[in-house]
Length: 83
Image 1: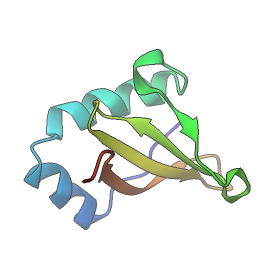
Image 2 (image 1 turned 30 degrees about the vertical axis):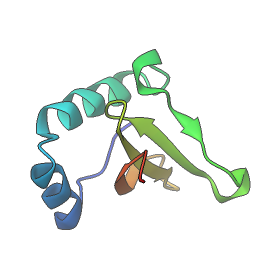
Image 3 (image 1 turned 90 degrees about the horizontal axis):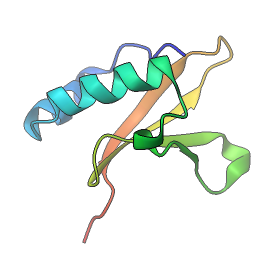
C-alpha cells in the first residue's frame, strides 16, 4: 500500500527528532507488507474512525488513515509514551 508524501510539518518533526533512517525503513516495510511484525500496525480506538498506527521504533509511531483510493495518509508522527 502506497504512503502519500508527507506534509512539511511531519518532515520537520522527523528531522528534529533524528528519525530519518527509521522513517525510511518503516515506510519501506509498510509499503511491502502492512502487517510486518516489527511495525505492530494496529487499528486505534474507537475503531469506527478508521485511524491506524504503525511503529517507527519503541518510542515513535506514525498515525494514519486509508484514503478512498487505498492510499495511506500519515496524519501525525508522535511520541508514543508522552509523560
